[in-house]
Amino acid sequence: MGLILATNFIDRNNFKRVQDSVSTIYEDRLVAKDLIYDIQLEIHEKELLIVLNNTTAYLSQKNKAQDELNDSMTQFSTTKLTLEEEKVFNNLQTELAALFTL
Image (cartoon, rainbow, N blue to C red; front, side):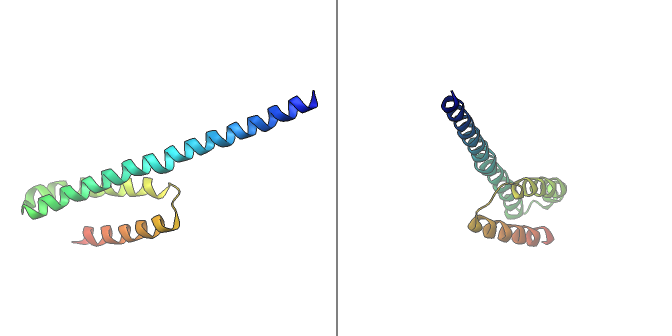
């Protein structure tokens, strides 16, 4: 009887560990991937407006785009990053700050 209880307890702990791993993969990888895609789209839209020399549209969308980029960056910073990802993310933050000043 004790052996059955012990194996059930171990199985329950293993199941909880797997469940936590799956949720971490979802939150830290798939959500991060979507955020990276959103950030890339916002930056690309800014590039197109600058290349097309459409300053009126750029200026009208400037604050909205910066707010959306800042929100995405804030959400992305809450995910768990590897050391390499953290370096790239810090570089991206620096580059975005330089872009906003332009």
